[in-house]
Amino acid sequence: MVDAGPLVFGGLAEVAEELNSGGGGLTGLQRSVEVAAAATGATGAAFIEYAQENGRVVAVAGDLDWSLGRPIDLIHPAIRGLLQYSRVRELPSSLIGTSGGQQLDSRGLHRIMAAEVAANGTGVGVLVVSYEDADGAASEEQRAALGFLASFVALQYGLGRGLPVYSDAAAVVPASEPFALLDAELRVRSWNPPAALLTARPADAAIGEPWPFPLPAGDETIEHQMACGTWIEIRAARVPGSTDLAVSFRAQPEQPPDGRDLFIALTGHELRTPITVIRGYVDTLVDHWESLAEEARREAINVVGQRARELSRLVDRLLNAVGDDGPAIESNTLLPFDLVDSLHAAVDELNGEQRRSLSVALPDSLPKTRGDRASLATVLAELVTNAGKYSPNWVQIELTAGADPQTVWFRVSDRGIGIRPEHVERAFDRFWQLETGDQRTSGGVGLGLYLVRRIVERQHGWVSLRPRQGGGTVAEVRLPRADADGPGEA
Image (cartoon, rainbow, N blue to C red; front, side):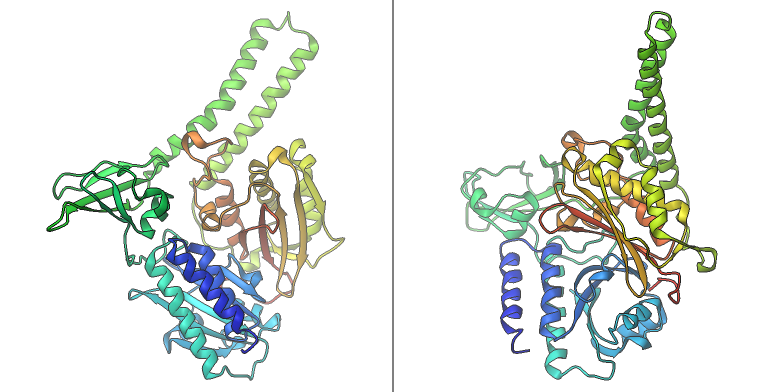
């Protein structure tokens, strides 16, 4: 505890400074989790954010780094028992009674301590730390430290600075909304941190400048779309006894889009492009067959075939995306298979450009995994496609694999533009795009990673994204080992 002091206080100071400047989000949450491990003398730490029906590990440190992205069944009696008795709870991991407990135990993490996080009266998640000794016990100082850090995480959720991570997580009323104070000439006199966060305009750039948005009359609330595309609601009121105007504004709550309209809007261009190309080349062949050289005919037919295959893949993805979101596949119907052989076969199914950009560094052998071998080609193709989309010239994409006592994993790593922490989970949403509207420089309809997560989790595995050290992104897929006990439902 003494040696960890500088790291603990330094880490808390970093997060507090970021919150004071209007930041936070997943970056601050990750730093808080790292501090939790140091402050409690634990070997690892993780934060599980609550969603509508379950939870998911969204930040990790130390010996719990393998659990990033893992879904957690919060309805399971063992998990409910972990959370319901006291705010800080400690127990041997073997008593959890789920596959998650088995995975902890098999990795030598025999004891855990957990604290539920509640912000503004709403439970938002649980902060967990792990230990190697099953018979040990946390000191009062360690329990107090975890309880304090749970409150510190709750503060971050209460401020609403990029948290919760999931759109379907528990709603927390932010402690403050974006706010500005305008003088008689409608120039900004005051600009609070939430205003800076929402508009990406720091206070020093806003203060003294004209108010940048329309202003409502009287008690009316008006809507306005910012240049970035976000719609905001604006209200204004005269400050009593002053010529100043107080303005509050906030991002409009995102409404679930109409499925039909969204389907048409996002797929129209993607479907139209290959169809237009195919029609153009076919018309050329029909009208000018006799005058075209053999080489030109072959080139045209090759293009038609390539575009037809692209169209077929797109249709398959769309049908899968709007199809039945079924439950996880029963474990006894999943068969053991060799991941290394399957990955090599999946690489062979990639198109030529993808294969040329991919560096394969797989071990000679790994323990067998249990799952649906046929779906692996789709998973790899989507991950490589996503990596290439955001990598310059489709370079430096690497495929690696390995195993631990409970899972067999593989990673697709790139040296592209990287991914911001606040995007690592949104990227798995259906139809979500890093770029939108006129900013888009790459194709796609935002279904690839959504399909990957759906495929992997139905096989009791999980998938995660994280920024890569030195630049780029790492996508990691974990599937249960065939010789491990139990599916990965919690």
